[in-house]
Image 1 (cartoon, rainbow, N blue to C red):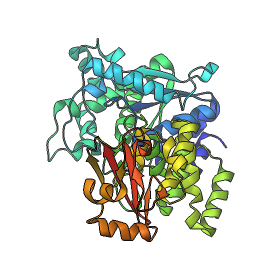
Image 2: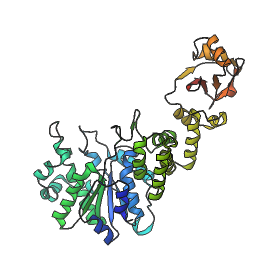
Image 3: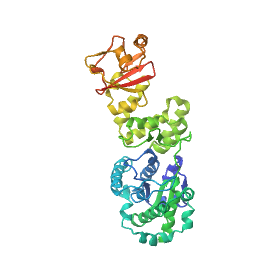
Image 4: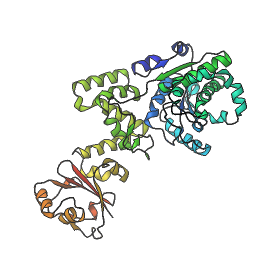
Length: 424
């Protein structure tokens, strides 16, 4: 399959200009995707356009990742209801370097003729004077043309600044610059970028007489109408300091059956045959969640590591009763807190824990996990209490050797009720 055929079966094409497929069949073509540098990490909302660049490179073409240092200082009105905070150059440079490290996990920057490149539009915009810009660029695009864009029309009622109104001209100039200096003939992005991208192809046509192309992918949504990649805590980031590998793995593992097939086609590098086989397995036995497991594995290994993936799988077993005390003890503090996020947590100060604290005192006096020693004793007698995944008797003594990471104790009350106690 060529690049367009690959994207079609994966459901990754929303709009495409006529002649794009013919251009790609004619020669090795250079294409770019713009990345907003508003944070020092990519999040999974960026993954669609990055996967487009990945497939583009795999088909023998040259990808460019453009970090919008200049456009990040302006603010894109597309999909936004209000102005956003503008960034300093120092912040943008820092974010750019962090993003580059993450892109190395997807793109090959050292593979010969079609090696990936990373550019920053601040480098060619910083010395462009305002008068020079409106004379050399602004005169080629009419106000009527700019006003017709959805990203502008949607903001007219609430108000749009000249800064954001001019955004499409700045992005259009990026395409022109890369066309003239990097032989870049294709820009790709999300469907909300179509208007901005087409401004670039129009600017290239009017200023140089050349032909350039546009391709957009659908905006990713969830079947239930929720915003893709958003949780109660916010974005799912690629940086393990922002989103732990365990939480990252769990996000993909828990996508709905309705979304699993679509997401696996878009975000994984599994082949058509592999995905179709998984889809058949899913239809026969949905409870096994074959698609979700394959998707979570593919992405967690690619973005983090196989070691992180294996640790996440082991940690996942703990909450479902399959994990052992040894598994629990292997978790570092970050992983432990990720696994038991949302579980009731409490802090207790027990100076003499190293000398030993009777379990009934610990459960009913120190922590109030049970309302009384009698209630705790009865449940222990019924084999319903575990400390760090091990069932205990009512003569059990909590000691320093029971501390996970030298500070935590996991109490399980019945089959599903967990309590994480931090001992100070």
